[in-house]
Amino acid sequence: MPSTRSLGDLVFARTEVTLALVIAVFVVIFSLASPVFFTLPNAFDLIESYAVTTVLAAGVFVVLVSRGIDISFAATTAATQYLAAFLAAQLGYPAIVALGAAALLGVALGCVNAVLTYFLRVESIIVTIATASIYFALLIVITDGSEIYNLPAWWTDRIVFLRYQLAPRESIRLTLPIVVMAVVVLATHLMMSRTRLGRQIYALGGNPEAAGRVGINILRVQLFVYGYLGFLSAVAGFLQAHRVGQAVPTAMAGTELTVLAVALLGGASLAGGIGTMAGVILGVLLLAILQNGLNLLGVSPFFFQVVIGMAILASMSFTAYAAHRRQRAAA
Picture 1 (cartoon, rainbow, N blue to C red):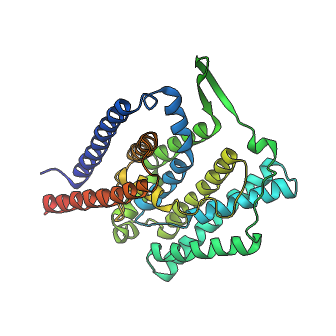
Picture 2: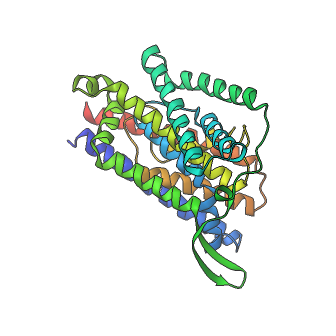
Picture 3: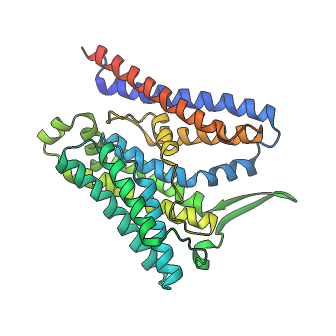
């Protein structure tokens, strides 16, 4: 009889293979429906437009693996973005100070979630619903809802690492959001798959009681995972303002379900202990392809929210079914 771990690996493989097949089907469908869809410029534009979502999904993935859930990341992203913009645009501080302060704020807000979850013994989703409301409300009160448009050039100037001309009016560009996204994805993958800390996060998510018995410091791991999401929220806030050229207190409001759907589609579970970064990337690709394809076909953007809801239900159903199969096989 195969072990639970090997069965888990098979679940990961099935999830990723299934996602890859579904992505291939939709690529064919949308390519036949629109000649613009299957082109390199469109692909690179699509990747850049989902860079912020991917960065946030990497942090949410780590929290989900630890058997937590944090939906306050949108409020943290907005708060860190506004702090950096205020320091840089209004007070004239250099990039290292503004971005460093934003990163510290993100980590601190994430750690608040970890501390409250650990000491209050309350489900993390309840804690982060409360903190999300508090963070957003305080940000609006402190800033009076005002926007910051005069961001410095080092923040708003387009940075292109590589440009390749395909035709007189077509080119592909390797931009800053794509590069930062790639670094975050690689770093998260290596941390979760190659380090002792990553193994501890999986162990905590798989069985918190057993993790505590073998000497894993649960509070320290939770501080890291929520702090890591807070840090990536600050990174996402910087990238989002870089793309739009302004800082808005409610910039990321309403993105929670999209990011959560990406992580769940990739095989992460609300029950914790499973998931891979490769699966998260495939989840991003699937939602990006669906949104872009539907837009090219002229489908109402509101219908995409239906797609997100269906994706969350489908991924949770699949994860629950896989867990049930593992339990039966282990019995």
